[in-house]
Length: 141
Image (cartoon, rainbow, N blue to C red; front, side):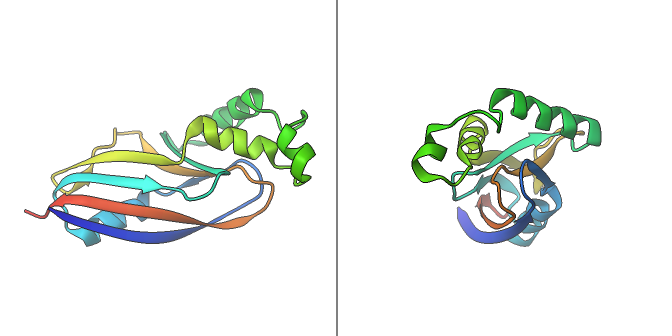
């Protein structure tokens, strides 16, 4: 079994910035030459998350709106009172979605559905250059 670990960087905007990273992770899979196995994606940090969704403007807006309803930015958070950085909502949102994905690799391709893309979401109240750890493991032949 082969294990390849790489780090990619993603530039994000302020707020709920939903970035399609499917092409990025497909590229890393192709370079790995893994044919059967898995890809693990992980965001180090507590204000970013990963998920899959149909990357279409209506669904993206629906997701952003749903996240706002679940963890509104305009309510008091104990984190903000303690640290004064105003991003308590960012931590809660990221925790709800989670920092990682595990995607099976079959015949050298990610096992995504027809309308399913991989997205990185920045929830922080700052634009950031975020790190993404990409680990591909499996067999090359």
